[in-house]
Length: 313
Ligand SMILES: [Zn+2]
Image 1 (tube, rainbow, N blue to C red):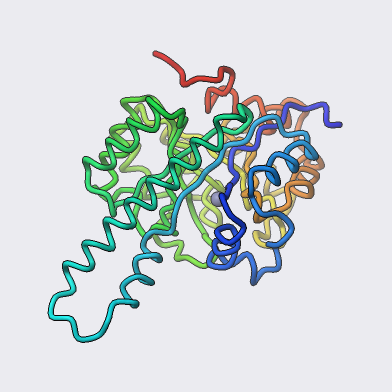
Image 2: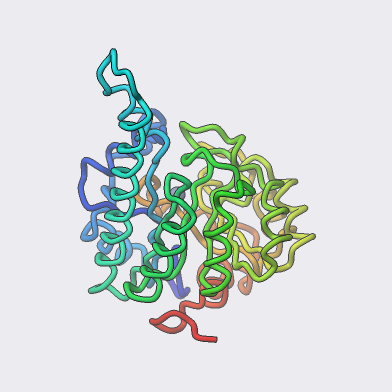
């Protein structure tokens, strides 16, 4: 048993194996031979957490809306005189699907205080829908934060269509977990860390956590860390040497350059097996204090996980 408090701040959970298989495939994990061991179903998730000694995990659930829209558009019949009305209908269907995904995430967490529900919003929603979705899930359904997967959603961090999301998150004082850098199967162009500077400039009280510390765009992540003391990071994916070829020494210096007190553990379970990632982290040449911080203590502070309810101010 690990002597450490371990909090996994970046996992994904699924209501069905079909859905987790779909994501594993489109996100490129199947091609890399990584998927298949876990499904991200709630039972599977809890069993793996128990095995790995993880006491809490953040469900960073989202939907690849733009990809889903592409698929729906290609299914429209040829020869229509008007494609705008059916396209609008597709949008409304996608909004409803995202709302159902958020609802499932919040409900899945209800009987399991060790699961922390994060919801997602998307520019397929209008500003009002984005605001209402966040307010309702946070105030009435226990959502504790918002996941935005800019590459998978094909939207830039500083896209003004996301301003209502940042505004509302800042108002409600809930965290945003934002993807950064490379994304298997998607273009990294949307998620270079440099684009977050404008967001942080406009929303100075936004509790933004950058997933993957910029994954391949590490210098940009370091520059952000220097310029914006309020930003924090998670180390999901980059702990996997097979995908991100950082040496142990490079990982340690990356953590220290952005600040070991600003990095939380993330694993992107179920696409990655958490065990070898934890073993690698524990084997790094970090101080005991840095290990404690990254494995769990930082998460308590950054995501305010000490209590079971949302922080009140
Ligand atoms: Zn992820």
